[in-house]
Every structure is written in structure tokens, then in C-alpha cells.
Length: 143
Image (tube, rainbow, N blue to C red; front, side, top):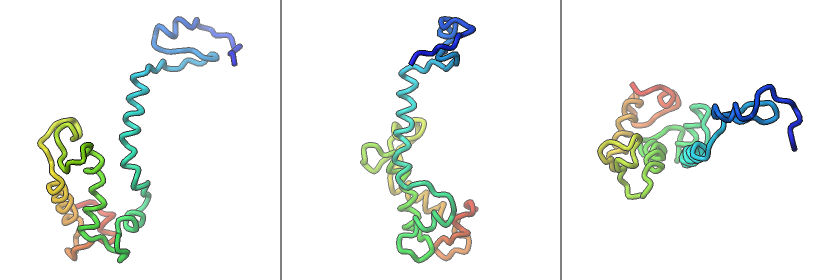
């Protein structure tokens, strides 16, 4: 469908500034590398979407609570929070090498080290020190 609206500026002027004109409207001229970068970023987020969107503490609690007792144990917490490690470990060798880490820098991190960090966060959130997280503890930031 051809646009029949007159344009007040010539199309070549918009192109020269990195924009394209269509039906009297000027749009940025996206090139192929930008589109590929956008697709790469969006596709890298796909593994994180596997857990689905969680909108409330009760959603987290119900999804993390594997045994359905209404409390989150350390093992349940570590299993749930390990999705980030799994998403970054591209070669599935159980070690995050510098090229797999955000920013491409840092020392390698093993799965056990990662789970120990998660356990430390769990212990900070477990305010009443009963070995599990309830809805209030889960919603509160680590102390």
C-alpha cells in the first residue's frame, strides 16, 4: 500500500540523519545488528521465564514449596534459586567460568559455592531461626 500523504521534508534528509520516513512519519532506521542484538537479549531471557511470572509472596511460596507444608526449607530455597546458575552455565559442566559470568570477568564459581551463597542468604532471611521460611520471612529482605 503506497502512502499518498505529502511530506514536508524530502526523504533523503531523514535518511542522512539515520531515520526513515513512511507515510509522513519519521522512524529511527534500525539496522540488522541492532535487531540481532535485541533478539539475542530476548532469547537469553527465555530460561528465566521458565519459572513464570510471580506477582506476590504467596505465588513464590506456592511455587517454591515442593512438599506443600506452607514453609520453604533450605533445600527447596536452593533448588528454586539455582535457576540463575543453570541459565548461566551454558556448557552444563557445573562451573561458571569467567566467560559465563556477567561482565565476562571473575573467578570460576562451582555449583557448591553458589549453593553456599544461597544458604547464607537463606540464613539471613530466617529471622526466627527455625530452619524454614514462612511468607513473612520470604517477603522481607535479608537482614
